[in-house]
Structures are given as C-alpha cells and as structure tokens.
Image 1 (cartoon, rainbow, N blue to C red):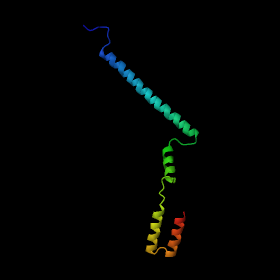
Image 2: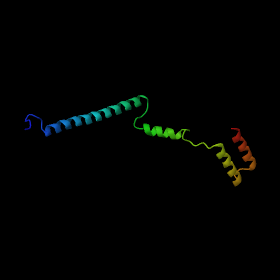
Image 3: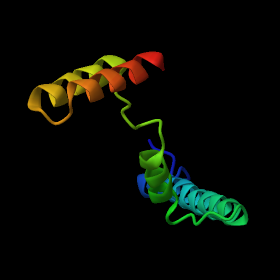
Image 4: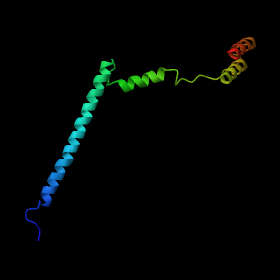
Length: 103
C-alpha cells in the first residue's frame, strides 16, 4: 500500500519546475550582467559597444591585410598587355619593367 505521507507526482512536478525555472532565471540574469559588464569595459576604452562589430569589419576591410597586392609576374604581364594594346610605348614598358625587377 502506498505511503499516504509521501509526496505525490504533482508535488514532485512542482518542485522540478521550480528548480528548472530558477536555473533559467539565473542564466538570463548572468547573461545580462555579463553583457552590461562588457559594454561598460568597452565604453571605458572609448569604444561604442553597439557598433563594435561594424567598426572592426570596416577597419579590416581598409587594412592592407585583406588587400590583394599583385605579384611581380602579374605586374609584368600587365605591362606586356598595355604595350600590346598600344597604351604604352616599348620604351615606357622597358622602363617600368626595370623598375619592377629592381624592387
């Protein structure tokens, strides 16, 4: 025969729900506190935390790290195309070639 003093399934469900709800609330409070802390640190450094990602992306795109620098071979080939099209003279081509090769 079941113990009449033992908690029923409704009481166990209520206790489990209270524990899970407490964990969820603590998680959200922690996430908000961490966000506020990070925003305060960024603001102290003179950075707008709301535009940080956009600012970093703009700086990265403007940096030389992502810019393609043509190799000597590509630059010499471009000179040959310009000379073949008549855009530059043979003397100009030779002068530019010597400058590129001297680098």
